[in-house]
Image 1 (cartoon, rainbow, N blue to C red):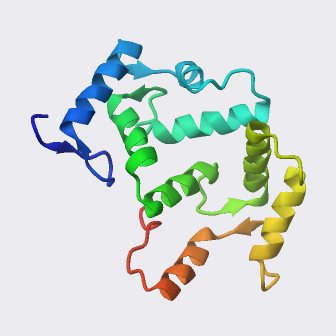
Image 2 (image 1 turned 120 degrees about the vertical axis):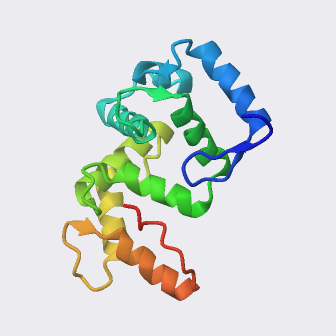
Length: 175
């Protein structure tokens, strides 16, 4: 550790001093050096949610559990904190895509999008549109050629945006 900086994934470096503070806090809360799903929900105050919201929180936990061992260890925790606090927009976009692409097929289908909106509605109480109406609206707005029936390939959308903006970096290349 020393005075060097720690890099979590491909994200901006966390200063060693700050990393040490997080390490002490994490070890105080989780002496086993592992955070369970239940502890994650308790930490965020997310108990008593409906099944859709619970599934969403479970998916968030699973994306932070990078080695898929069923726990979040300190390195995974610091990577998550780093993403939320210091992550660049492209990194956050990549993470959100992985979060919402539940089946991992490289696209977000209507069912996955509907599940997202149902969970979000549970969290913030938005009642203007039903999750079904919002899902249909999103698909309608994105599908300008009427060629999207059940899935949206966000990689193509991002690549078109990247060409227009002149960015040479593809945040989806690791997916």
